[in-house]
Image (cartoon, rainbow, N blue to C red; front, side):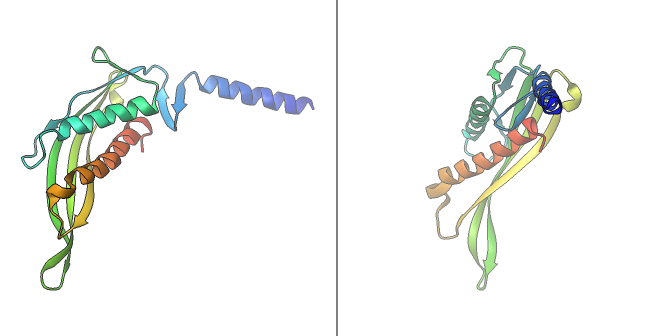
Length: 168
């Protein structure tokens, strides 16, 4: 009986003290000293991208962090910072078929992201995130562009969030 009580006591201490170093919210692991973040509006350097794409992606990342962490957004001395550039936005023909037609087209977006962790510069990183969405070869891009960007954005923001807060 005493062994069970001791075991429960040890487990309780382990859980309590592990919370002093990191906190976890919806599967994220963020050091306890990190309280704030800032996402700079992403630049667009791809001539074919829509001009508002950088703002759309940076707002989506802010929303994701706000929804899935306890971090506060601030422009003044944030603990972590995100900067980014849309470097590619293009449509390619995929899955060629007999007669030199394509089965579908693919919209691809590449975003170069810089993660700055002001408390530990060794954890800083820069990485390109590329995502795509396919659409029928008989469909006009303008007709489906918003839906494609939404799908690409969701996947891309998830990848960035996981890299920053889950180190996936």
